[in-house]
Length: 85
Image (cartoon, rainbow, N blue to C red; front, side):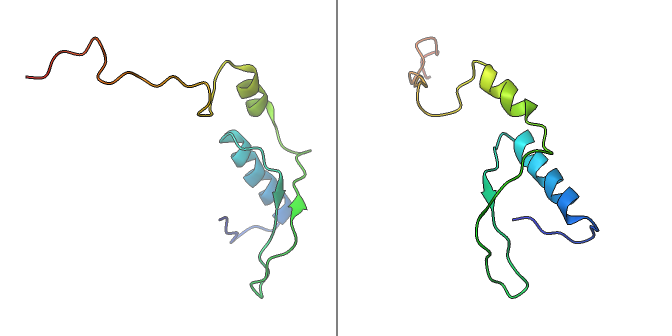
């Protein structure tokens, strides 16, 4: 949910919003707008030509897994944990 109040150039504001999504690890694919009559428009593809995608590229190149797949489940209680009193 993103509200616009005092901005003259909506396209520049939208590009900044897309950049914030990318910075937080999201790759925007499509969007839709809510009209003044409170009706949703059709889905439109996001134009990422003005967005710096380097943070996503760095994350993809790193050896970091963000999904639940390939995660090891820690043993509980850990073997090195002291016994409870």
